[in-house]
Image 1 (tube, rainbow, N blue to C red):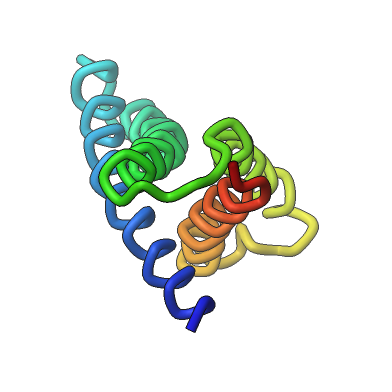
Image 2 (cartoon, one colour):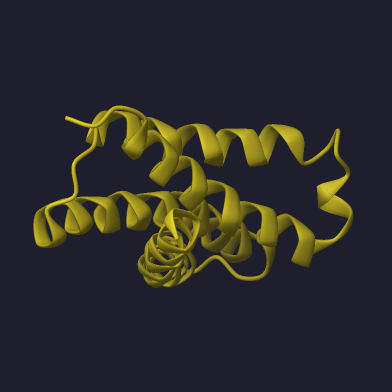
Length: 125
């Protein structure tokens, strides 16, 4: 039962993170890109996703703590989001994740919420 609750909370964090990733991609591609067309705007949009998704999972974690009164460490949850983002970027080449975009984003969209939630519940207060 605890595993199901963990997975449901992880999916909730991922949904909030995806909303922030879409906003980050829009801001990165359209607003910051300005007159940049083609690969320049694409690079900024991907950068917006890489910043927006972990930020959204952190916001979801704060909402989880405030609205549902879950006990845990916000600092470890935030560090889990950062470690998940960096680990996906660093391990994409050695694990050959970058050969398939669906696999790369699948690992990114599962690793970041899992490490965020795992870090949050690592030390309950």
